[in-house]
Image 1 (cartoon, rainbow, N blue to C red):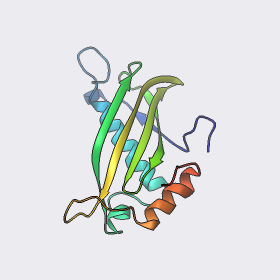
Image 2: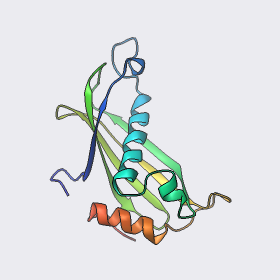
Image 3: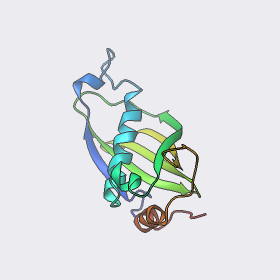
Amino acid sequence: MEIDGFAFKMALRVRWAEVDRQGIVFNAHYLTYFDIGITEYWRAIGLPYPDGVAGTGSDLYVAKAMVNYHGSAGYDDVLEVAVRAARLGNSSVTFAIEIRREGQLLTTGEVVYVNADPGTRQAQAFPARVRQAIAAFEQSVELK
């Protein structure tokens, strides 16, 4: 695990369509950046979404998303999106996310997913394969 607590980081360049009239990234796009980061996190731990999780008989549903804005990004900025599983419960996982530009903190947030049966959409425990992949990657996830 790296010193700042994030084992996964990726680069993302701001595109023209993401910038508003003020010349900065429109606020809602940060949730898209969170989603891209989490999607790449799943790939990094060996369970690319959707097949890596769906192949276990489960699927993930967003239960909560929170964004805190600390600064603004603009067109063509290269952002660093950092993602970690901050908490792994029986049927939910909380991802902590930070977005930085050249070390400057721009956005923090969290996204909580609930693992569920895709047919009934009722919460169910994470399959062992998913729990093990997250725990092995993070090495500090609080398993409950």
